[in-house]
Amino acid sequence: MAHFSPELARRIASRHGIVSRSDLITDGLSQHSIRRLVERRVIETIHQGVHRVATAPDSFEQRCAAACVADPSVVITGRAAGRLWGFRHIGEVATPIALIEHDRKPLARGVVLRRSNIIEPEDAVARHDGIRVASPPRAWFDCARDLTDERFEMLTEWVLDHHAQVPTLWNVLQRLNQQGRPGLARARRVYSARETWQKPAGSGLELKVLRALERAGVPSLVRQHRIVLPDGSVVHPDGAIPALRWAVEVDHVTWHGGRFDAQYDKGRDRKLRKIRWQVERITDAELRDDFAGTIADVVEMFTLRARRTAA
Image 1 (cartoon, rainbow, N blue to C red):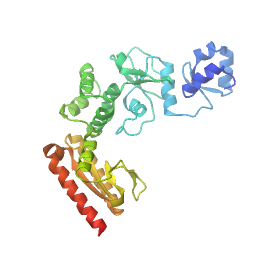
Image 2 (spheres, one colour):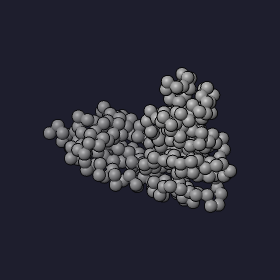
Image 3 (spheres, helix red, strand yellow):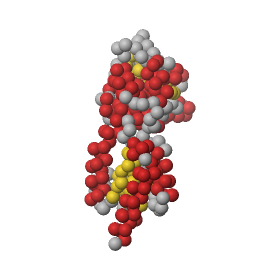
Image 4 (cartoon, rainbow, N blue to C red):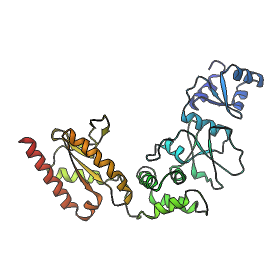
């Protein structure tokens, strides 16, 4: 970045290679100099008044940063925001989804535009790289228009486990409750199927089970033990005893969103059996109905496995 001051070069690097025309002028470049940089392909115009440094690698984050630099009111939302937050169950997304107000001018290219007259301060989070991303609850709601009910159910459980609480998502639903809003019907339908008392998958139940098993005499359970399957994929059961090739998994099926993982789990268990691993699966429903009895059953299965391995 020989043409830029050290301060501007650092700013460009932090924004994934994106620079605004106003930043270039503030740095001392004339309009003629900027045109020369474009002609020599040192920089490339992305949006009106927004450029990317040609040597910077093209990336999803770069495209998001460019949209936010082009219009400071833009908020990256929906599945695009989900990718930035690391959401699961949203599928592949390569194009930024920009949430803008109705009176804003459209961006030039490379962006999916979503207009809304409700963009509150709590809906956006400003990142250090210049990207304004929708908060996890707002991103969750905006994903509803692009996902099936099944995918959105799984996403809801994941967001509750990692980013938000039940009242938070409920408040977002109430605040965005306007007739005709895309995704609202799906968000209502999916969320209303979930009882408010239900804990999300990935709560402390797994740890509670492992500790109960250890107290009952199951020794040296390794949490999230890494197992490579015959096809090269990797799984991490909730608890395992590698020496016995024995593992235990806690499945969350109370909320019917859990059923969409059942087919995957069965296939994974078949692959584990090919390499002589035995997996004992128990459900949150079993544990809720009879925790002590379920733990006793698993301990019995462990004892049988240990005896057979010794024999």
